[in-house]
Length: 366
Image (cartoon, rainbow, N blue to C red):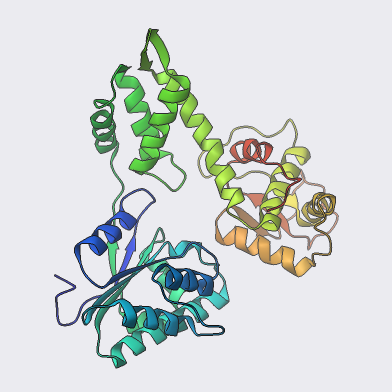
């Protein structure tokens, strides 16, 4: 209905991973003409647009504005005047002051050029970020142009996940399962999935891992999904999540987060206990974290990084809500050598991150 209206609306489509946002865009593309999906699978928007052009049989030009490249694709491929554009996974674009300026300018240019060519169009941005964060990606000008509306994909509830898992299990021959195992997976995915709460795709991944790797053999050729198998698969997935998170960062930034983890463990060895909700780990000195990072970095040939670059990486970790950095008031239980020293407090789960750092070969930078 939106596509066919005289003034189509533009949507900020958001929700956790695994809820069908990208699938919906793909289905829409299959069902309609002149729908284009630009998948942001690189931090560089220019590279994203070049790959989009190549996939659509259009050769990118050197130093061409990305909005012009997109316009050339649409003019060559569109069969009518009604155009729908999805920018998928915009979270992967490199955040920072330049993003909201440059990405916003490109969106404005695309908007204006499509308008000038007489297209009736809508532009939709797919993300895991809440609607309130739209300005970080667009800036005021693009936000005003698009007049975005929010479209939220709500997470699956615990009961919905449970029923969907059982529905899939019924199609597997020679498999038994316990109610406890299914409930355990549904509960953990619904409540404790580190930003992927209610993600049906994650629930299926854990179920598959539990069956393939940990299921109990009850008789020849037949296995049973038990709660113990589900627990083992979940624990493995928790570590894998943080491995993916670290590997998804530039190597230097990932090594900085790992250095904060290692420094926290070394500084408070024997003192750290499992913390309750809203409790914080102990702080570590920024100067000691930098010293540890440089020692690790030089071992793999990553020397010569200036302090301001490290500080930018730290700011990025803060924006991702993984750490907190502040100058602390004097406390008797901490040995201060400089009252104006910056101290870093880890906000992410310490031991989960530590186990993830142990699964990565830090001698091979990426």
